[in-house]
Length: 248
Image (cartoon, rainbow, N blue to C red; front, top):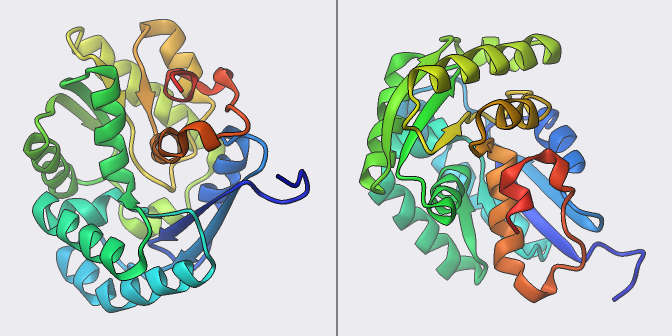
């Protein structure tokens, strides 16, 4: 294996026309030699209609990533999967795998796999989304046998989340994460979804206080990819980014 070439390429379809926080956080938590190959949709709001509008483009993006010969493809955007519902989302993933011959995932299915890895069936949830999105997410998780004991959120529109400030997001992650974990001592993990949420530095801080795994999109999706890579994994991620990647 050449030391100058990536040993693993993760194809990532993000809901937006640009890449910022996804790549910025990925290259801090992923191990040496793992590359993120991104392409995007143009989601305009958190609604099923907006998701449906982007589905034809999604198939084009899957085909594009397959031509790039990535090792695995994942659809970012927990609200996207939540709006579609678990049954339909898994049908889309199965069709994508059949069409491309590649394993296909979503951030939300990666969260479920990671929670199952920890045996976490009762969780706390912190988001920056309105109640409608949180309710759909809670229903999706329930379909996977995972109960949300409590949710604390600072509701924002998609446009507001696109223009958030990293330092403010870090403080918000600490505020909401600590609040909901204090209120739910029986929670076995904390889920803080959102690809646009800059929260990687909050994860080890919250875990040190509460002793429970904290899941972010980029952590769970990277974990799922590395877990699937198995013996192909040339380098392990830095355990300082939290319990999720340290469990590999």
